[in-house]
Image (cartoon, rainbow, N blue to C red; front, top):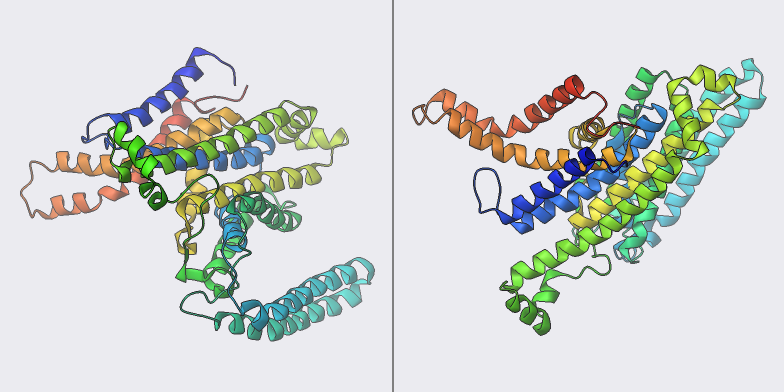
Amino acid sequence: MTLNPRNLVLFGGMALLLVLEGAVTKNAIFSGSWDFSLRILNMGLISAVLALGVNMQWGYAGLFNSGVVGFVAIGGLAPVLVAMPPNPGAFTAGGTGLILAFAMAAATVWAAIAVNRRARLQVRVIAIPLILIGGFFLYRAIFDPASVAIEAVNPSGAGNLGGLGLPIVLAWPLGAVFAAGAAWVVGKTALGLRSDYLAIATLGIGEIIVSVLRNEDWLARGVKNINGLPRPWPVPREIELQTSASFVERAAALGLDPVTASTLTVKLLYSGLFLIVLLLLIWLTQMALTSPWGRMMRAIRDNETAAAAMGKNVTRRHLQIFVLGSAVCGLAGAMMITLDGQMTPGSYNPLRYTFLIWVMVIVGGSGNNWGSVLGGMLIYFLWIKAETWGLELMRFVTSGLADGSGLKVHLLASAEQMRLLTMGLILLLVLRFSPRGLIPEK
């Protein structure tokens, strides 16, 4: 990032908003709560990581990924599989069957690919459908009894395989690996499509991933949710701090009660962890962007035909950046589940985890990593505050109407929709007056 006064003012303004949110006495604009301010900061840092992932795909290579929610969700699965304790008896009941079923699925795909590559056209037309249909029925014949057996083990408390009981921080890179693997499969099939078809394909695939997580109880309990995920080191439980005599003494010396002090301490420790990850990612992405590889990616983005004429494998590079960007999104998904302490597949929706991330990238500055960071934090702040501000605005607008008036009731009930109006208005204003974003690409 160029250290010019404009950029410093923008980041300073973002920091000032967070400080005012916590320091100013509660009013119609600010909450006056450091707890709420730190909550916005933590999710803003995760949103910045998400925006970096999308910026790598769009800002570096011009790939429009409208299925971001799917890669966030599959990254969020990693903490469940890594950090949760195993469900005793679940693997014995159906683990072997699951392995055989997935092996059957992989063998089916491999056989279809082999026939498609080596057989004559007349053979392919008949053999490939037979292989795929037969493999599907064999897969389901093995998979269904195995999944039912797993879900029958302690169904009220678990009903899934459980995890490995390992430190949850290990799930963060694994979430990136999960998302990268899914992106490789998606990219091998969809990156040959034209840009508008790619957007449609990724939108559908993202929804498929979320639907699988919602319905496959053996994997992560589906809509029953998983609660009680462990904390990463060095973040303790609030109750542990509240029962520590030394911590209570330090909190009293600062004029804080133990509950408030423990809550703020936990959130600050999370902020430190997320900030370390974000700074590391910024360093890596900046190094990549200014390297010969980064210049090649931007050349492909600006003119694929000219890049291909110079001997660059455009499809392979598109696949590479698609996988890398999705991996960053998966990392953010794992971090978010760790912060929440629970896995709720029903909460993944395209509005929050695709559209809003795109607004962050566009507003911050497509192609600029620091712009994506600013956009991620600023747009999340406005997304959270817009509902409160909208309600206050509606109260002011309807203050002259009689209580019980149909119009007044309707406007007050619709205040929560101010989030959507605000995001749309911001997007329109930025595209009109600063189409390259707040911090444009250099």
